[in-house]
Amino acid sequence: MRYGQAEITNAFAEITNAFAEITNAFTEITNEFAEVTNEFAEVTNESAEITNEFAEITNEFVMIATI
Image 1 (cartoon, helix red, strand yellow):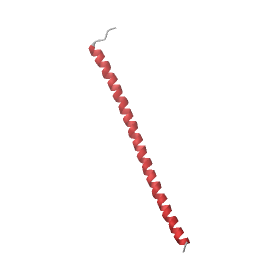
Image 2: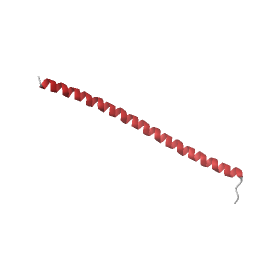
Image 3: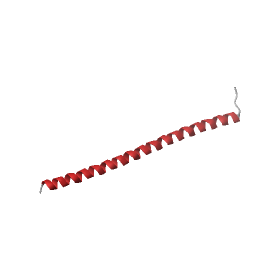
């Protein structure tokens, strides 16, 4: 079976569109990972703030205990 130029061009166009859809899907996945990473960063920063506050409280207890 012989294919004409238009059929070959259309087939390549379909393949190109399929790759574009795959690329878009990977972009969406990458964006989701970025959002999750940002949320983990926020939680990590909040944990660091809490840890620092506990350290300050601990230091104040130590100062009180040494009086």
